[in-house]
Length: 575
Image (cartoon, rainbow, N blue to C red; front, side, top):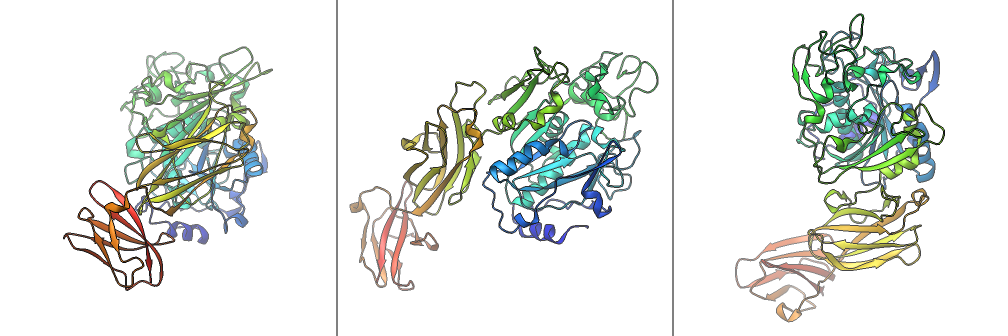
């Protein structure tokens, strides 16, 4: 297994997360210099690389890492302008690039989903420098020998293969970051690669979950695209017989039947089926599901189930005076056209060109303003991003699909270990009106809604163990608010809830040895240090309830007393 030492140690240290049982990815060897240079039109270009200086003290302020996936006949470099902005404006850390060759056997006439080192595998991963980061990129512009370029048509390969690569990228990113979910951002066909992973349960991680919190697509042909029929200049370098063109079709040019990948049907090629060209072979192969056999009845992606508990958003381009980005037209760019019963419909954001009369499709990955709108945190508690207490996070205020709407951001957190005082602190607020509140698991407000005082919000809530939501609302977001993230933290300390002390008699206090509890209802007691460290848990089965405090040093201790229907905390002084 060819892994850099630092990558191996990082993965090894994180094996305790839920996907630890996943299979290792074996890298195909290549010269080291291939990692850093990309061939474009017979010229070499330097690739974006990680900064190893950021590895030592890195701590992400994002709830989940982001994975960027490029589109047809493209590469990870398509994201360079936007990620450069994220680096400079937000101080984000690039975690690395995943290089996959998806025609690794060099034979366009056959297809399979095998992964190197399996003999004849179509999918091969090449080692790249990886560190824990805020975001990662996936790159299919890789040749059979691991050099970066499109000689193998890897970036024009079958979407079934691309979905496997996305699976492996998700797996490794969770290992590297220790996070339990990721955000996928796909341009054009990269959005379909993401959906291929999400909508096929056999692609999921070993714990039978996809671990995707959000899917943002940019210019993705959710309903397909027949732009290859037009001969647009954008298609220079695109092979119209490639697997990708086959998969992207709404319908085939001469036979007129529906594209098999998106709409399903039998893998068969004749004058009435999958007939794209007047002369010669229509495609290099017709094995849409990459099973190694021709003639399968493929279930179209738009007929497969789609998890409703994902935060979906889309950026859609429109050329001057049109409802198309020049490559993908509406409604094919709108996923909800094909999934009309989504519980939480997709949020749409548009880039309207002023002087683009042919296409702005290829420009979309560079429009970081619209990308930030699409990356907006969930508007519903059911989709809330999970955050940890006692950790600082960044959030973003962005203009919504309906520009008059408030920006509602939901985060989910858990209280455990007894009654806690949860101190919510939000700073660096740069919108004029913001408020925040804590909701219980049913969505009921705990306490009151608190408005900002200048650039900050601070309040404390006493919370019993359970799940809660932090709801942050920017009432009047502007188109510059996204430039400065707000910071928030939920600091917890053990606290006492409001209850009638007469119902819980305990003595003596201060105590030297035995603390007596004169209450019948208490069935469990948990002793904590003042800093919140759990020291002891006791179960009571008799009417006599005592706690031996003699073993503890002098100081103040908090004891959470639990009955069948309540939980209360008392403060005890050890003498």
